[in-house]
Length: 498
Image (cartoon, rainbow, N blue to C red; front, side, top):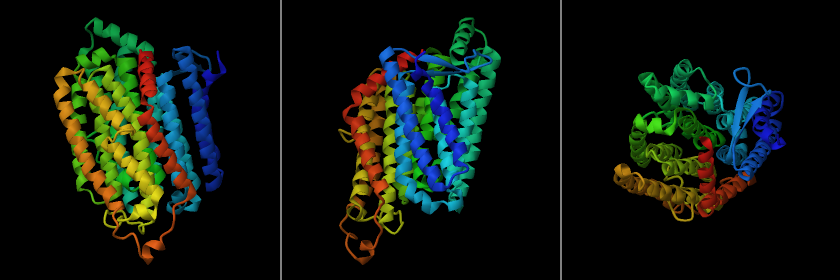
């Protein structure tokens, strides 16, 4: 066995171990350890990606070298490696861009706790990407939930505390449904490893047995993970959660956490329940309907919102709708478009939250459009970053969002029954995106409020924040201009899922 094949296991354990070590470190040392750990795990994930591309196949790794049911398995392929690399890059830049604000927002005695939550969050995301065991996935879903709740409430303010409570209640509802589905599936198949479970499911359905229990399994797992990822109408925890957390927490929660659950759902569809069974059950149609509803309703809520942070959060509801709409098309092209949009949204939404911080800093901490007038002149880097993120969400050419919408449109052509409504909703949603994002871009570049003593006295953003914004902008252009190799890797990774 090649030494590189150990890297997925090493990445998960290293992230968890960093959280343990951070408990006895100061806030600054815990931050440095987290940044170092994120960089190392991302590099290891890149090695896994290159290894799987060279060999042309995925592999399984038995932890402790014991087979099931005594041991546990990790499975790595091109798609897992690519997703882990993307998650690592977004996590690193989010922590880097928001670390100065974390010092201001979090009590000094609790700053190391903040980075413990970051470490556990990355560990759980990597485990959701790599695990080949359903119960292990549930365990790390819970770790992810607890870490996310800790990141939200770490500020210890009224809105953040209420947001954390709402997040925990809805997340536990989703986790409970997911666990019920896994329990029924285990009772029917007798397996928790994904590949044996898929074989058992195929044999059961071929014999015509347990049709209703299997439909229940599919429904509760899908609904449970849809709740946790914020699909409309299960989105009510998103505005306060994303809007009132620290900048790093908002970027991580919006850019990564919901995507981890979506990736897990795609794994279960492909590697456990089978795509043919999903299509025959018409579950894809349900996800499609809620996806297009989210695309429209999330944008309409965003248009009405006067708080910039909550506006960006409502935009996430619409973008998650895009992803579920792609899955709901029921074609491989739709899933490829959805997974590419996972990367697009991860990079772009984190860029928007981090850039918005730079605009708030030079606007007296205020977040309404009127107070942000001229902010892009007072902080040019943040202005450019926010503009790039906004244009990407609208679908401007050369940016990642344009490729996502192009992929969704072309994949709709392969699904005749859903082609027309998909294209119409894409056009309407894009128009609504332009209304609220371009309105804010125009506001931050408005000449009124650029000059004056009050604006001149505003503090400048930190060097780390500017570096983070620049790197996010470059990442967005890479996804937009070099999309073909990435789409090819997603397609190759999906072919390895079977």
